[in-house]
Length: 154
Image (tube, rainbow, N blue to C red; front, side):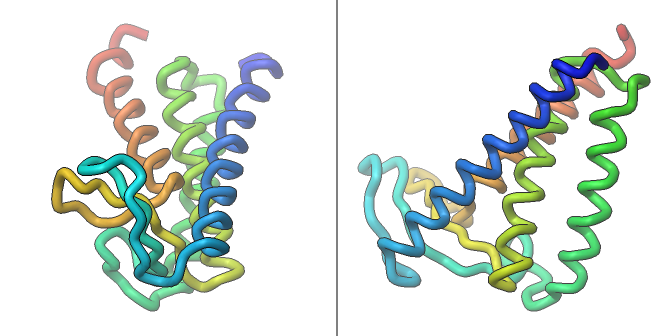
């Protein structure tokens, strides 16, 4: 992969981290824990939560485990993102989103010992999440699309 493409994918990751951290900072500065405010009626609300676990608050309080998982995941994503053997725009974009998401949540865990969540989908019963979680989910979907539908053709 050429340097320009590498830089592009790192910029995507950085934009995810910035968006995640800016929204988290806004929420902390303007909400009380548990406070909810409607953004788009019936669709999206902001609700400030502190999550010391993973998705659905599993493994609550296991901060060292999350440090180890985050460090390992960052290393694996960087390996695949910069390995010239694995080159595809969809795959690399997915990895860049995942990398930004992992780093966004890792920043919270390092300095807060929990992750700030705030995005609540009002039209379904779903856990409250954040920008980093969204980037990880979208990135994994892109990677799976690549692996299932495209990788054999490359």
